[in-house]
Amino acid sequence: MPPKHHCRRRLRSSHPCCGAHQAAAGCPSQVITPWDVTGGADGKIDYNKLVAQFGCQSIDASLVERIERLTGRPAHPFLKRGIFFAHRDLNELLDAYERGQPFYLYTGRGPSSEALHLGHLVPFMFTKWLQDAFRVPLVIQLTDDEKFLWRGLSVEESRRLARENCKDIIACGFDVARTFVFADFEYVGGAFYRNIARIQRCVPMNQVRGIFGFSTDDNIGKIAFPAIQAAPAFPDSFPHMFGERKDVRCLIPCAIDQDPYFRMTRDCAPRLGHLKTALIESRFFPALQGESGKMSASDQSSAIFVSDTPKQIRSKVNKYAFSGGGDTVEEHREKGANLDVDVSWKWLNFFLEDDARLAQIGEEYGSGRMLTGDVKAELVGVLTEMVERHKAARAAVTDEIVDAFMAVRPMPNLWG
View (cartoon, rainbow, N blue to C red):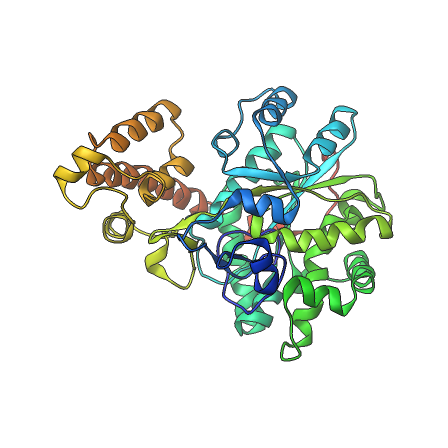
């Protein structure tokens, strides 16, 4: 699946943070794979441990300041608040950008549900900011083939969901002059397929099994799929955008569970004459029930969808959002809320744009002066406004607009 994100299904898998590797790494129950996210013994994800295990780098204040200086814009809240917290080769990409060398963005979506949930929106919201801030082109991969292979959807249903999800993605406000959206069932072929084949020949079976945990029971489509997700990281996969150039760098915004795909991609890149892909990686967007895993598009109670009504949003938040408040009002007033586990507080960190208001809520709620019901009401207001705004934008996305984004067409002045 492309650099996605926050809605993945369960699958037996093995890579450097599970199985035998897990015990050696000292995380006996934390499991982070492209398909499975489970917290440690306390239910939490240890992100510092993930950075060390995966071999990526933390994003510090100096790197955020550098991005602000280069773009001339305030950093996105996701950067300032540490939601996008880790990277690979981001400094090297920014060095090249300062020298006038181009880069493009790559992200994606595996279409498995009729509508996106808010966790799905997170990488697209951030990618939109990156595209606007750096004025760079973007490719978005819709892996309808992956959902056919893993989820048992028919080819026809996978293709239909890809177009439906495309409307939600376009509604985030991407620039059609710089954005190419493609679905695998329609686009794979030509230069793109030639890169897929080159990547496949680079990766031996024992490596792909070690990364992804495939077994002899898995269909051969699953084993071949990682190369399809890797190919968009090479610019000559898109000759209508970049011609045959190999000197255009690629930056992938994604959740950190996608890192194994792109470690493989980065291993292949120099052998095929390409530059190594850079990554900027996010924390997981927690389910309403708590941090121990990710939202699931198949569990309506774990997520808020962009198609939910204001009544549904209010009901889900009030009924399911895990509270860090005290068991009684008296206890809460005395001890305050545990912000480390409170989901409403965590979600406000994602979606409440006003830094001063967020800090005020944190102080008031953490001290016990603000009650859980008050914080949930604040969140309901933020989410309702956000979802209603998204619905209006999506309603304006016609089939003709989808066709325009997905058309293989000349795309001049990509860096404008």
